[in-house]
Amino acid sequence: MKRFKLLVATLLLPVLAMAQPGVGAVSKALPVKVDLGIKAGANFANLDGKEWESGYKPGFVGGIFGGVSRKRLGVTAEVLFSSVKYTGNKINFYQAAKTNYVNIADSNKQGEFAVTYLNIPVLLNFKIGGPLWLQLGPQYSGVMNVKDNQNLLKDTKTLFKTGDLSGVIGLQLNLAKFRASARYIIGLSDLSYNTATDTWKTRTVQIALGYSFL
Image (cartoon, rainbow, N blue to C red; front, side):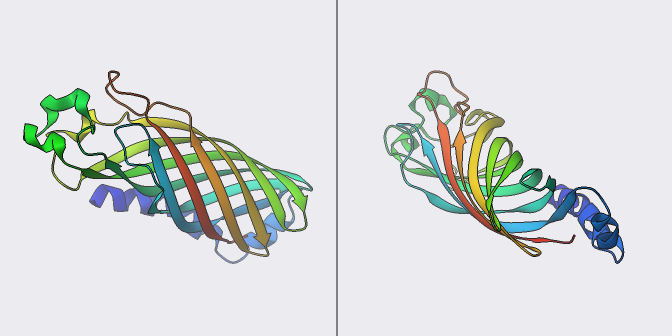
């Protein structure tokens, strides 16, 4: 937890520095519009796969963003921490890894896993009209932590692969210094650590509000 807080503080330092008086005037003198700020919102995530309960479950997302734009085209990069929850089905859940259960009888139980990710989306922005922009691009997500809420498994590290590549499509409203976005994030990678299981891919709906210091 201490390392997590230190990483958050480190990521926020450039944002706080850019928020100091005078920086906004400098950015206005540049040939492109510079964007730098913080954002927070909600994830609604689903993990496809017969071992998992279908349905979009709520979680949190927050972090920093930065980007540049000119006229109708721009690019944005973000560093976000996000949390999601996945629920394993009874009986079918993680059958290929029975030896990983604390108790073999637990294979007949429903398990809930809270996963913390570090998300790095890099998005192209296309102005549709007025303050509305279309966003498209890839996102890399690294698994930072997996919490086994029912303590079913001996080792959660053998549950999910550590990285996930996704495609992002969304809309964003740029209203003065405020940003409001809605995205659909489609997982392209198989998250199953054990190749004997079926394919596990994520689907996430994300909504967030942001504030730009520039």
